[in-house]
Image 1 (cartoon, rainbow, N blue to C red):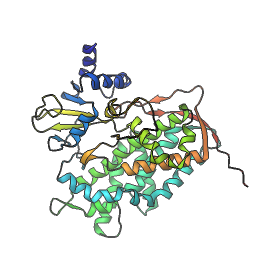
Image 2: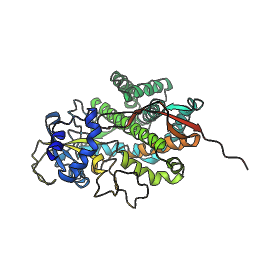
Image 3: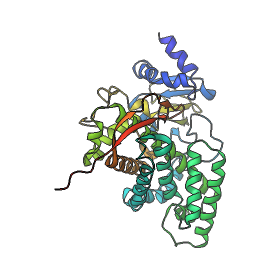
Image 4: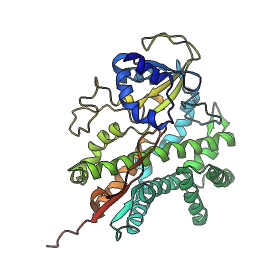
Length: 396
């Protein structure tokens, strides 16, 4: 059967539905038998599937470069995603503070208000199309506010609408986002020190011993922040919504305040919506146990590492009582996800607000869950859930 497995990887297309549906079992074979398996995809790549090998790649950016961060060639700059140290470090130094949990907490009341408004719109219906009516508008609205924070309410409204369109695959919406971001960046450059937010940092930051960022770099960062935050957090919310409908006892578990300290990590490991990214080999080496040459491309499969049976007992199951959970849902090393605290905060608020108001979720009879394809495969993209309002506790 080995030839059949290799044939699968030889001809894999990350965006073909039948390949996405079969990928999990093929990655399990790869971890057991051929952890660095070759594929002909996009000119040829090696898929890295084992946890320890993924860490090796991440911990050696001087050998495994991020200058080709996708499994397909990317035609535009995407800093800091496509940068290596030391320039990567310069970008992260001025961005990190805005994506710490303490900095993000100032947006929590608006995020809670947004979640409540989305539930207000459906609570009398007893049913919700969970992706378009909750996961997408919540993540897009939250992300637009944090990345494109603006006092001009009309412009902010247009920004939220444009980011929402980006999240559902509207390419023309990118132009609108770029125009809005460009206008705000111009204002920030003309009035330095007037704000303390992401776009202020982009407008005034310097790298490489004092060089200001080019406008292309500034808009590239905005693109990375939006793309990095939309599909991934939306996918995690979609997955968890499905688990609520299909996993007995999970609702009660996620109503406990402590769920965000432990259970959330297991949900992140299991969903692994940042599933696969690209790297470029810069030096001949055999660090992964097979000879690689400068110019080879890698597909580093974080989701496969999170299902590595040598690191996680019962890796294909949700196990909330793991003694240790060293998951790599946010990657590892210098490129560990800038937005990890933001993703955690969004998930915490999305489900705390949701479960405070509605519950007893089930897939609506007569409907079918439709799933995504691509590098975040098989997350629900259309899913009708029926629910009941949560009864207020009786007053004493």
